[in-house]
Amino acid sequence: MKPAYRNYFAVKACPNPHIVNVLKEEGFGADCSSLAELVIAEKLGMRGEDIMFTSNDTPAVEYVRAKSLGAIINLDDVSHIGYIDKNAGMPELICFRYNPGPLRKGNDIIGDPRESKYGVTTDQITGAYIKAMELGAERFGLHTMVVSNMLDEQYLEETAVMLFKLAAMINHDTGIKFDFINLGGGFGIPYKPEQPAIDLDGISAGIHVAYKKYIEDMGLGPVRVVTECGRAITGPHGFLVSKVRHVSVKYKDFVGLDACMANLMRPALYGAYHHITVLGKENEPKDRVYDVTGSLCENNDKFAVNRPLPTVVPGDIFVIHDAGAHSYAMGFQYNGKLRSAELLVTSGGQVRQIRRAETVEDYLGTVESWP
Ligand SMILES: *Cc1c(COP(=O)(O)O)cnc(C)c1O
Image (cartoon, rainbow, N blue to C red; front, side, top):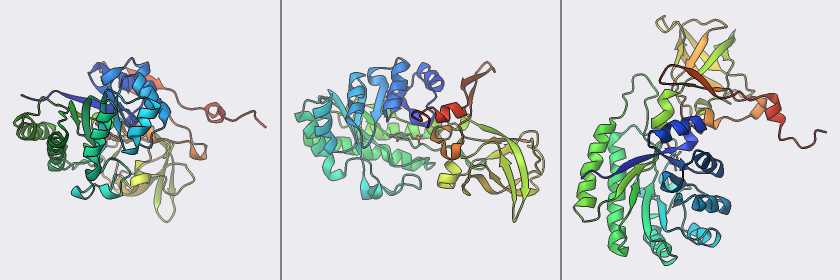
């Protein structure tokens, strides 16, 4: 039998309530990792096991709120077992984030699991469940999140195998039968046009084979298998649309947009590639090489470096692709650069503004009694 499956959308990837609501209507849960994200889920009417709370370095107030919503709480550290018990009470259903350390290789964004601040180690994991049980937990989940933007299908399947085997080991040592296994997010998308998308059906089939072998045939089923994908859900469907303000010739050629890293900082932060097309010039030869910049007073405020593009002029519209996850959401106000509006294109083709642009009044709104 195929395990029951659900994706809990990682709200941090695209925390616009209108988008989270569309996903909720499609049957997604919400994966939250902060108070504000819990409030988004709560205001959208999500409750109980529709919400997964996967946080780290968590303040008590967030555990209290998550517990009062009946969310599934995923603990990041053994020291949080006593902490949540003291501050919110041990929930009946509890999950731990597992960090395999040297047993797995991470990737560029998250890094080597041994250097990672996340999760419970292999030596700690069984004891963690025993302690939670002693404090009254009765149902259990198991989670990991070791990679980000992973395009290696085999690696993603191996994560499932790792967790299934670990669940069997913990069952052997404690008698726990897991309610669910959470494979985390990190499913990658092809940012470059020549990259193929990962084969989700193939991965799913591979995970099902492993599920049968390590869970079902071992008498440990049924266990729900869930994920917390963000990027794979909204990433390819968002675009940063920006107008060319200036074209400058210095030691290199620069295109200055009316957007900046306040709107999308993945290129500045990770050297990430985002594909760019120029509206109406999609089929023109890419006969120039530009750095595509914003107006922030930081030289890494660039959407692309040495990017072949058609010849552009002020007024051209740049479309920066795959900006639907971890893009607008990461925006900041450094240098007084304000975040843009967000528009939703509905399946009926209408364009609806779902967040207005920030204003200078917003920016100054938190200043106490203007001097
Ligand atoms: C960011 C995050 C996710 C989502 O990651 P994607 O790469 O967008 O799939 C899922 N779970 C946790 C705990 C996260 O921090």
